[in-house]
Image (spheres, rainbow, N blue to C red):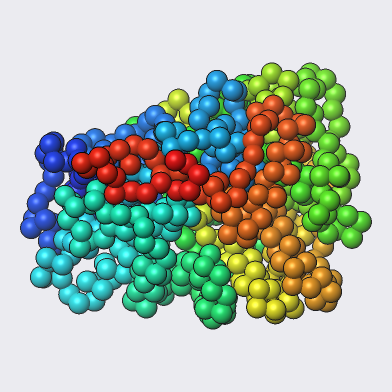
Length: 601
């Protein structure tokens, strides 16, 4: 289900059930909206469901016209680059201090409930909830739909609702559950005092039990995606026995919606290239497409439009999302090819901070995990097929002091295929690269974590080693260009850096014990899934956020100026504040139906 199918049906969706839209909808009629009775057909329900899928991209529909540009796009990006990666210490906001300063406050945990980013994310994800509820509500009125199609529509809608609520739960924790039984007029009165995990579980369980293993339309979710999301929910809830039972089935029998047996793809970068998407590692992905005929980049990952090198780069804009030095140092390996799990910042990776692009610079020559150069753009190393990263000329802040010397890489399209997969219909780039919500490497590492929590350290090591073995395959080295002047002519046989990575030797996790094995698994997630929006949420659910992030602030503040003064407080910063706008809109007779998260009053 590529996004070209989404645009035509957006006018069919009902007015949103975010509290803001709820109150506004009582005063402003939905222009051009169709009645539930008109939509209560198979084609009408399918159109509503397609609209529920369309909301995955984070583009907010305000009830009358799509907001296809502006800060809503990046406030609500489904990649969670701000809330998951920047707040998790993997990256800096980037750019300079005057541009989008609200992100700096999120990065330093100094935000209050009035920060507009929180409201942008809240209302956009609830728009997705609303579209699933609209689908289910109209489906109940459709009498001509076969039982099989009714079950399929219900299961897909409930999967999507589970996803949207999972997002809200991990971001805000205390959120109101609004389903298809809640009338629009009553939505703003729903409290946020109940734990919604059981309802998230129920949605994913229904989807798992009722979806097929494969779909003719690869953009639609299948039973194995639902099983994986349910297992992930169990993991977040520390229900390890229940999670293991599902992960065992997923690893042994799971397939993608297009029928490929779940497996790690040979080339790590194939997960971040539009030419090789929807592969065997694609468990649940958000479909993106470039140049869809709308004249916008709304379908081309507009939420990440800021996250390209700046200055003299070929991407025009905007210099955001710069990986941290702490992340770069994490890819240092020892003489045996293993990571410095506890002491990585005492083995820093050499960078070009303060070195002009016109000055000579020699990249780091010591041992590195090759995943560094598929994740981080750094001086003197091929930036995909765009030429060697030139350093300061692609960094927005003079001297690279504000946010460091690095550029993001996983979201960047290839030069050779830019005519097909880049979208330049806006002032910043769009791309057809799909966004991975869950990929199979993530599944293996969640399974490893589950096994370790249950004391099965040998099996946990086996899963981790599958991920490390893929990274160690020389096909995943970045090689120097055969001719630096024309990199598109191909690569040489000389690695671009001193890559050295190995699997953990037999018995290593057993010798480390449960706590040591878990620490190794947690670090492997950092290496494998870096800049994919998981890190902050992982740190919180592990209970390590306070120590890890405050150590990050101490170290990284010696490198850059942007996050100085940052501090994480456990019991408060584990979750973001309920947006003040939503509290205000849910207030009646001086009392709000929403309770603010601890520490933000």
